[in-house]
Image (tube, rainbow, N blue to C red; front, side, top):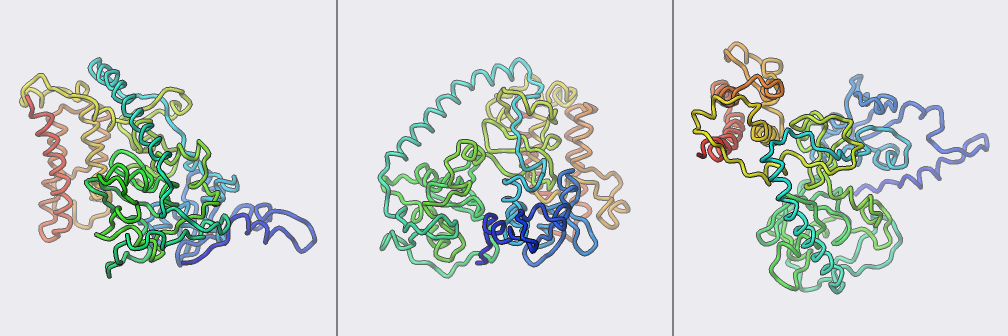
Length: 461
């Protein structure tokens, strides 16, 4: 594994200038506006002013890229964390942002505090009724944390105190015979996410968030971020469960990834943000670092107060007013409101189709958000006539999710018209991709999500 110098070491090594003057590297004229950066084997130049203006800011081979596009160009898109994968003379850009040497509006994730959802009286009632449930859940979380704090430190957390460098590893032999043998199944080179399970609980472990069993909320489940210790405590029914042994990846214990250096344990003296006990740092670990829709855009992220999801203002439905960021009230995303809201149509399915969407905005918003989330590669989001050769000559009436979203926001639909346009996406996909089964399968997967929702919501009497 390549070991990069820390930001502090880089500053020290470059502090002395030829003229005997002392200055930090960021004040040098050659770095005042541009920084040479790398991502994998790709090199480029970062324009600091363009980054601050949320514009394509990395120039490579005479082309301009956003940080996320440059990350994809370098083959690092699986990390979904350009701040960590793009480096300037060693340190990742994340460290430069944290120390204020770079400005990026999307880095300081602001928390919107006010819901702009068009709640009916039923919706408001459902939300208020759910507050008691939330308080009970918070009490359960506090009880779990108390149990974790009282738990005797097991052999798996014993380490040698080898300084505060994050690359210093904890002992890998501290569980002795309890560990299973490592099989021949190997992770991919450069893999940054690992699907893990413990009992009936499953989640995605993110390498960039992993620090140790207790430090770093590195496992993303459906509804929250957890540390490995919390994950095994919730997933395993065994009283003596150990996270290295009982969390499984591809049938192997998590210790197999540590032995292969795919996961690096931080020293107990590490003071990085993952290991830091600062309340703000711990609070940020509860939320996603990127937009829930993997849109690739920059700009402020709005974080839901009741789940880990984060959104750009225009990615959420309904779209959010940036001014709500400074409000002090909790903000709840559409997914959370829908999951706590009982939707009972009072009309038949045929009657529902004739109702304007303005009367049923919550389920319509939820449906489109769900479809956009399933379409992670944005195959059905944009106008296919622009990028797909021969599409307009084969398809009479093209349709895509962004167009449907625009018409929904303008309230130009009845429920029936909305569903008809969504179905048109599926029929167009099937017609155009007769000889391309991989794209047909994507359309089928999206259609299944749509049909399950319509059957559960609009067809229910």
